[in-house]
Image 1 (cartoon, rainbow, N blue to C red):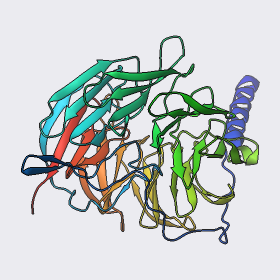
Image 2: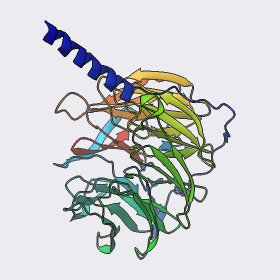
Image 3: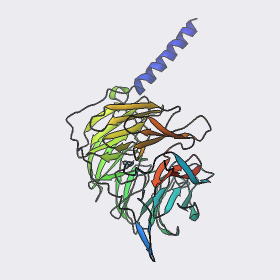
Image 4: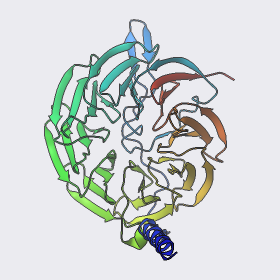
Length: 420
């Protein structure tokens, strides 16, 4: 009997210790923190490109050139109002490999990176392969800029490279030995490529030559993708630190530490990619919190605690921030002060990011064990579910020339809206 009691007490003690370590701290709300209601124009969404062929002019639609749609990584394509359900599948192709990220899109082509190392260019019109090349693991979304695509690799032995290919034919232009696995999707702004790395090195490279412009050593692994706004780059680290650097030279502008666990004595990790809008930086953390930082100073404007990890990247649109928690809770928050506006509970856990296209926000769950996961679309205003599709686990959707492109678990789909 004594042994049983001791065992119960030991178990209770372990449970208490776990609760103390994992217990989130109270939320922060600084209602007087600076907020700019009208956000700056996005940096990398030019007008729809066209091409003249004799007497015919070809329009390729608005590009989706990098992870998060634009350099601010807001995942905000609210202006693309013609893309809405119901959908019909124009084409699909089995990948026989895990798709953690969707393709990027520019000038009629989709550029897809796969976990098994294949980088493939598909013609949007019919799914024809324009070219394909094999590398080591590619755990990020390729970025397109000025006829080149950029991505990072995870090489055998723990190294990694940043690679630039000719977007037309897939030929190698340059490669940079990063010396660390690269999970961070590339950011390309004003002729410079920015990337994080798993040993904490953030680097800027000349987009044409691959020559290193600067490096910065952060306090922990940088697995999220770097965001850009107003001449600054922003990222979070494993260990719970948030940074802003001067984009031109990598000088640190501010660093803010977070201690969202164990009563303020422990930190979670930033895997989520930051989204910059309204003079704020929005990012989720595995301490269960969604953070809003003042972009100019690093002050924490507000936090909101979710039921579990805020692992995916937030979408920001129309004065709202959309985030999914690991337990499957999707919440829309007011961007200014973090007030919850609506909540929806997905059937399964979620590691996915939220993406706004038209008046819908798309987010996925993992589905039951050994399934392809599920993709859902909710009305941004009231959270009502408008569409679901039984494939897509992580960061499934982009828009491409009037189509919805879905990266399923191991299948790529191109869907067109049906006329009503």
